[in-house]
Each structure stands twice: as structure tokens, then as C-alpha cells.
Image (cartoon, rainbow, N blue to C red; front, side):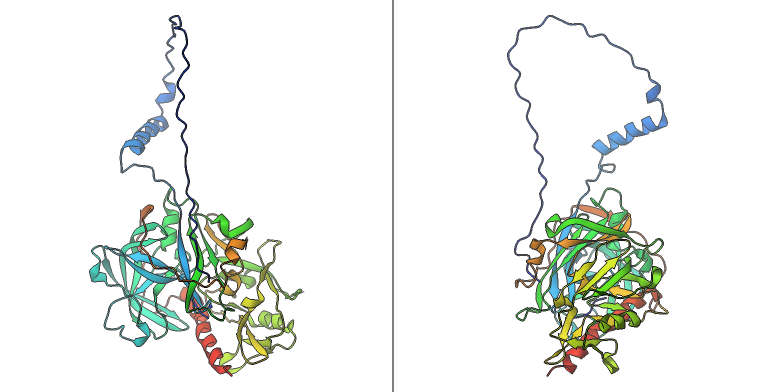
Length: 486
């Protein structure tokens, strides 16, 4: 789930077109008539044609060439322009649902795996939902009510309703019979206009609904995506005074990476064996201003790479050790326990290293500085988080880190990759502009969704506790802003 407060408008949309040039045969030169020649005919052995494999290859080849049912699909990739909401608090894209298709803005969250939309209902009359587009199942001729309860709880609220199926389009792709939550009860402040819901981009193993996520249905389908991956480039507006509530948020790519947005190689690190659910990486190195924080190895340092979380959360002893390297830092208490202040005059350089990689990725001082508490004290973007007793890993790595790298989530082999942002990408930081409009684009590939497993209930699935824990940050940041306003 998402949290916190400030993205360049992609002033120009880069599209890559593949062109194929076919050379026409040249006319033959005039030449003398040649004498007749005899070409001997040789009968081939039939032994290579009587195998089952050969027979099947001939049949499938003809079907593929001439019949629509057997026609080979062309692999494809697509993109969706993101919006930066409330100074890097969250990033959303747009999907289209139903027949006829209607667009909705949704938070893109790699830290969960369920898709849900606020729906037209008398139960959603709260003023907090003003300006939010709501899904109307009766307006879609392709909608199917699954008559199954659906519920998700976050630290900042909860959403309840039922499960349904419909056609969903996103980033140039379409999944028919996609299962999603049709939410008729939403806590105040869970959604902020113009966002209508959330699209989970984690693995189906953590889906409360039991449904296969949109991206995973495409990745599982043969010859659909160019590559089984998705990639994020996020913009930074947290330190831009004139930033509007909505600014251009960067680019989401599905099925391929955008080589214009990064330089060098993508450093992929495998998800630990058996941990496919969240996009898990082992946090192998953490340093601040050149001083290392000692971390344990293995699962005690597992981290979820989560686009739907604003900050970076980790076990108290390591967060405390990090701030101990910043002179003048101090732990906050009461409702703000878990956060730390430090002198605003201090330039904080934090680096993080994952898996077996030798690369330490830096976090901008602008991202580490969450908010100003007083004339001299600032609040850091790393906070203490206790996930014990839940299915969540000890660390949650959110947008505070992800704004500094090009991030690739690859399902096969299961891994997460980081790369250095290009000058094209970093030029988008702080570049004021209009937020992308929600659009319904052309569909380049379509697959059929898969049935759900029975995981839904009126109570939260334990796997959802990660989002519930992280969701607290949204409220805490809001509280910090009012507490320290001087």
C-alpha cells in the first residue's frame, strides 16, 4: 500500500518503433539463351516424414499460418505514464475496465497482489471520495459478479466488497475475466482523488482474493510479453516548492525495459528460493556517510521492494544504528515513535546493497530528508518497523530508495534488477508539468484470466499485514507535518 508526500511531466513521450525494410529484387541483366539442361530427379527417403513429431509439426504449421484459432501471437510490450501525487507520496497509473471500457486511476503497488476499485454504492457517500471515479458494474456488459466477499485492511484504513470479473486493460495489454475487488465500503482517507483503487503487482501467492494478478496472467501466457518483466522510473518532487498536487510521475514499462531511462547494465539479483510472493531481496549492505551498519545475513535481512510504500522501514536496532552515525540525531516518542530527527544542515548519504552484488546504490539527500520539523531539525525517511508475527519481511524498501534507480521486476528467473538512471530520467525530477491523462489505448495482446482460489473472507489474509504495517506511515507523516508546523 502507499504512503507519504512531491515529477516531471514526460514532456515528450518516447516511443520506439521497429521498422523492417524489405529489398526488392533487382531486374536480371540481358543474357544469351542457354542450352537446355536436364535436372535429375532424386527420390528422398520417406523415413524422416513418418514420425509423430513430423506429422504434428506439419499440422501445427498449417494451423498457425491459416487459422485464427491457431495463429501465432506476436510478442509485445507497452508502457503507462505515471502520476506523482502529493510530492512523492504515491505514484499511480491508469487502467480501463469493462465493456465499454472506462478508465480509472490506480496506485501501482509491487507490495501487494490484489486489484480493487471503489464502486458505485450508497455505502460510498463519504466526502473523502469526492472526485473519485467509481466502477459501475451495471454499466459493463462483460461484468460477472462472483458473489464472494472481499476484504483488505491497511494501516490507514480498510476496503470491503465482493469479487467480480471483467475485461481489464493496462499498458497496451488486456486480460479478459480478470478477477478484482468491487469495493463498496472504504475507510475515510484511504483513497485520495483522483485515485479509484489499487493494482497489486506482487505474486499471486500473496493475493487475498486468490486471483492471478494482471501482470502475472500476461507473464504466464505463452508468447505474450517480449520479456516477463515490468520496470519503473519514478520522479522526485519532494524538494520542489512549487510542485502541484499532481505532477508527471515517470514511466512504467511492461514486457520490456526502456533503455533511454538508464545507463549501463541492469544488476539483477535473484529472489531467494521459495520466497516468490513479495519481490524479496536480501539487504546485504547499509551505510551512512561512509560508515557501515552491521546487518545479519539471510532471512533476517530480507526486504520487500515496494513501489506502493513511500519510505524505508526496518528493524529498530538497525534503524537506530543508522541514525547513530548522524551526529545530533534523536529518536521521536509518542505517536511519532520510530521516526528520528537530525540537524537539517547535515548532508546524509545513505547507500544500500542487495544480494551478492558488489554495487552500493546511493539515496539522494533530498529523498532522505522527509520533512522539516523545526528551523534546524529535519525528520529522516528511514523509520523503525516491527513485522514480527506477520508474513512480511523485516525490511520494506519504498520510493525513498526507488526514486534513485531504474527498477526492474522480472518473474523468470524471479529477480529484481537495479540500474543507474540516465540523464533523460533525472531531467524529469522537479520538471513541473501537467499530469498524464487517464487514457484507453489500443490493445496489442489479450489473454484470458485464470480462476481464483478460495482465499477470500471477511477478515484480512495474514499476507496483507505487510501492507497494513506499512500503511501506518501515511498517517504518521501527516501527523508529523502538523506536529512540527511552526
